[in-house]
Length: 369
Figure (tube, rainbow, N blue to C red):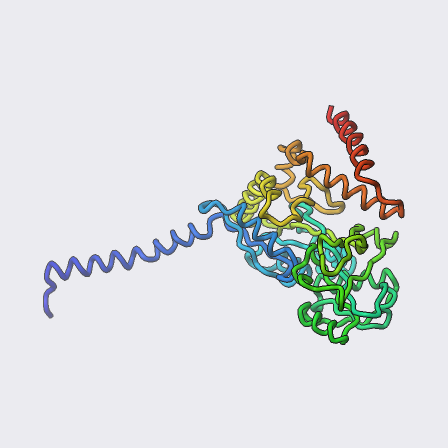
């Protein structure tokens, strides 16, 4: 048997050391890459939740200890199941009325363990129709596309048509395909829940299609909020002086029950701290305008607040409640418009709203003292 030279022995030893080092290097790299990662599931790619997740990812990622990985989901039904059972999903965006539907129908036992981090923005219910459809009652016994089976839009549309006692035949095509069928007259309308302005309707004109008003009634008001679609949202579909009344659906940022998984629990706690502490930067240009609607301190009845979110708010209650004067004034103006609309009152002038806002500020100052 030939004897190894000293050079060969040295080379072999080097190879052995290198081989033994590889698993350790891989393990160290894996730890570094996964440090502080939080997986956030969106409600789908057609709405605005993907954009909201991207804004959060930019805010949270510090390049070393925190990172958000967005995951495109199929909707609230699937997101709830994933929060409960899917390995790796830490937080998710949910549509509030679908969560209520799941609880009412007892479709997913045990979701009470899921807690909310904060209430997010509202998304508008869009009902786009072709010629001959003047109001929602005209859709009785017609075919309306409501998106894929089990999607958030399908559930919301079904609930609304039931509340209005308007029987429709539901079609379940993708929204893009549904638009083509609407143009051809193969469906009477397309329903879609999305934050305005929804990219789906960009470039459409009122020459062939139009939005149908969704009236705000007492029954509808138990679940949804009044709002409107304006020419500023859809210049090709809405005349400047004729806003379209509709309703809005709330959305929620929720977290899985991670108390038995300490590392992921800490990661979500770090996410909450960075999100809440840096929230004001999300109100700046370049982020989605829907962030202007978010109030971190807003409460959700019958829900449990995620512990780290509740603790942050307790420590920073004044920071959470203080809005810049311009943001607060805009929120106050929207509130007045929605309340007047809901009660059937005439819209207030800007001067009247400004005077009322001054009274509100005086009252607010007195409450703080």
